Amino acid sequence: MTLKEKAAHGEISEEVRFCAEREGVSAERLSEGVASGRVVIPWNRKNRLEKPCAIGEGLKTKINANLGTSKDAPDPEKELEKLRVALEAGADTIMDLSTGGPIDEVRKLIREHCPVPLGTVPIYQAAVEAVEVKHKAIVEMTVDEIFSAILKHAEDGVDFMTVHCGITREVLTRLENKERVLGVVSRGGSFIIEWMIYNNKENPLYENFDRLLEIAREYEVTLSLGDGIRPGCLADATDGPQIQELIILGELTQRAWEAGVQVMIEGPGHVPLNQIEANIKLEKRLCHGAPFYVLGPLPTDIAPGYDHIVGAIGGAIAAAAGADFLCYVTPAEHLRLPSVEDVKEGVIASKIAAHVADIAKGIPGAFEKDLAMARARAALDWEAQIKLSLDPEKARRYRIEGGASKSKACTMCGEYCAIKVFSRAQKILKGRS
Image (cartoon, rainbow, N blue to C red; front, side, top):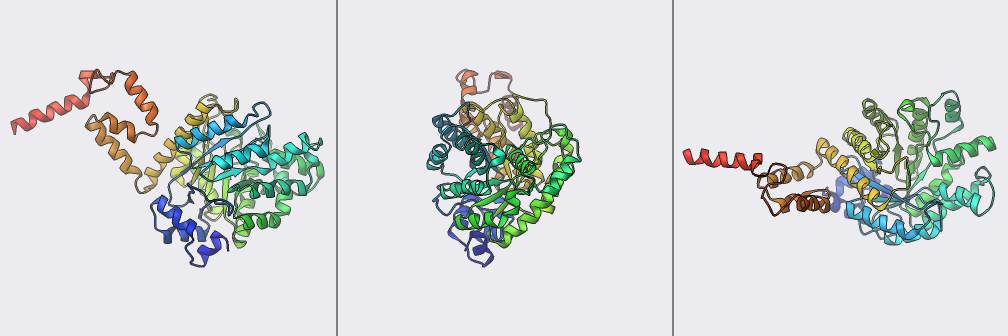
């Protein structure tokens, strides 16, 4: 049986117990979440993960970091360094989105060095190999070639896969009738759409969804149902094509659950701040409470170079409203492949958003971290403050650069530090009493 089926039969699996201990919740409660589909544990049967995680309702908001080579930057070693930095910064999962260089080698290297759940988008490799290896157009990929890539990734131990199953001919008709500013920005979605239009056929991932479920079930791969019609700018947010695809994903979610397969739903994207909560509620309603995995979201389009900040703003709102899983956004978003430093900044920004949301959601232990920091600040205990921070390395560097040895306070206020002044005032009051 699959993890979901075991949970539905009242069996608390080893995987559930492991994640429950890491999450700080009871195994019974976590198992109920897996049984209902409101929680997923991405964990390929071929793996023995050191740091698995559970994603979903009532749990800590999780963070994903994207890595991967491109045709212009095909070096696998650089991606391994990004992996190391992402894990040190606190990423809960990793996705390999490689489209260049030795794609199989990169994936296997990342899998070998990745102790957390690993995700991929198999359609990328299928499309690249169609062009680079078979010397034909993307639209000439066969259905078997697409599924061969999916099977290969499952066999290599990938724990979750993005699959763009919700782009149906019905959705395409709605898209044709809607004049979007930025059209389609999902790479995998664009591959599927071009294939469908050229071949005048239904989406092969939708039409052969049962075949996909067989692979997912055999390897215990969690399906991340991709939002191929997601908005790429604020002007296109929450429109008919996006919602129509979400409706389809909700229907596919139920089919996956019936097959014992774990599912999460991917979401936008670029969304105005005042529409983010509505998008979360729509997903939870239309997709029956399945975990929601969002990119950002980004509530403004005009901050290239600072999109990690934009994503943190949107991510905090989304997670507080019920999103379960944030895909990080780096400062390089929309501009280039991220550097090692970009990866770190992206993870930290998303960790801030997740923590802010966890406080709002009342996740046990979240507020207590802030309380501990407040007490350390009240005591001017700099070492404790540094250890409690999300980026201790940066906090320590700033403290040293500011002249840590010159004053117990920081160089912003020095002897005029409000905490020191108030402490003296308290001593005077105590002396009078």
